[in-house]
Image: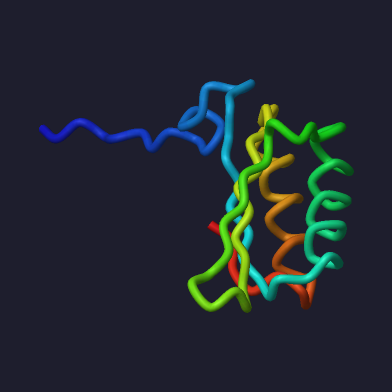
Length: 94
């Protein structure tokens, strides 16, 4: 007899609260930085400069930001992800 398997819920995959990196890529402009910080801070609280790293593309037209937050729930991460996806300045999110 085969035992049924139970898939873990998305909350069980993470051990909340946890350190969580959000990577955002888009055209290098001040508006992208301001917009992505506003979105993330709306859900995760104040972001300090030491939580953000950035890297410009080889030709300088694009930039990627990695923002480390303390994630508290899957709902929080889904909300951040959805708002970032909906913003036209954001090209990719990892």
